[in-house]
Image (tube, rainbow, N blue to C red; front, side, top):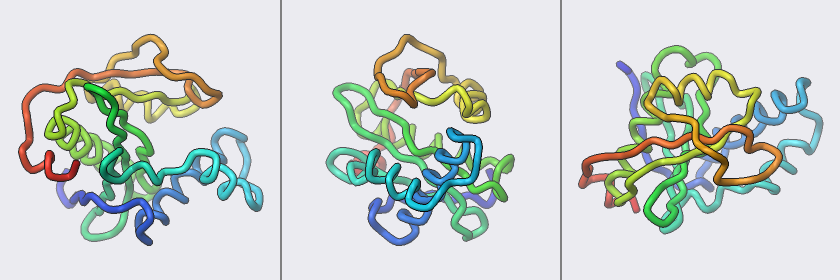
Amino acid sequence: MTGWSTQVVRPDGPDAALMLREYMAEMVRRWYGRPERPGEVDAALAEDPSDDLAPPTGLLVLARRDGRLAGCAGLRWQPDWAELTRVYVRPEHRGAGGGAALIAAIEAYATGGGATRIRLDTRSDLVEARALYARHGYREIPAFTSGPYAQHWFEKALAGRVDDAAQAR
């Protein structure tokens, strides 16, 4: 993961807004199997906002590779667990450890915030994401959410504490 750094940011900051828009644009393209149409990304962002990815309900992590903005991941606090969401790495940075860097950062913050496990849901068409989660110790579990985009559910038990991460909560 050489060259990768992560930082907690507010979801309404300019870099965060850019990454979240790129994430949602890719989700729209992959869902429909075609380029996004005018207004579709805005509608998707409005339908599934990220404003709760800030204290006290969550956080958003941006990843940089060699100083260049490269990806994002979010965390939502739940009772006794945390939800991993909005994992995205720009195409030109994929395959270079960005997903691993983002997952490690989110897991550290979740552990530091007292979560005992981390969960996520994802879609069937996001094959690369499902493989990433499996490589990092996430196992498929029964559904714990519903909705048109929740087709696979994963969980990972967390152990230990990272004291610095608790400050992000």
